[in-house]
Image 1 (cartoon, helix red, strand yellow):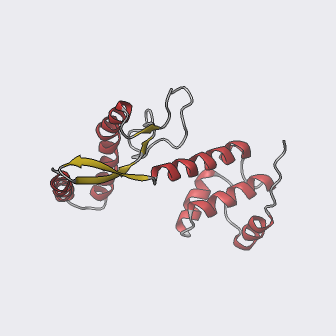
Image 2: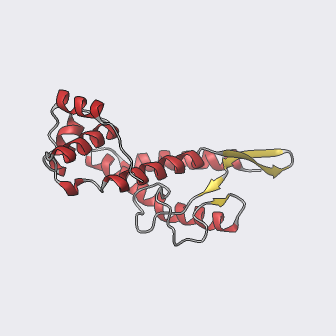
Length: 182
């Protein structure tokens, strides 16, 4: 099966904007400086690659891009599904209905894996599954600290008091725990 996509509107946008996509560095620096969205930059890179203005290896091949985009969209759709979990005593809490895999070796990303690992028996599990508990604990212990570290490092690089920011975060966590306490 062959998939044919018309990209004339992307081509027109590319020609109107004349983006600098000669290299990854140029694309990042100039496009971010111009406040372009990730979607717009991606369109520029795709068109630039097809025109020969951009290195071929700047993005995965189109088939992989299509698959990754669809997988990401589907994982976001699944992640948005919520259900009420009964806590007893007539109380309940809204939780994600399903839990995905945790990215391996990407502690600093702070996200669940949008690329389903096909080697895993259950890439997506129901929140009541014991595997969901293991994944959530792994995520909290391995991913969230890296995410926090990166944000605190940015604050520090901008002369902010990271101790104050950490205290604010601790207070927020305490508020959440109080709200969830039965």
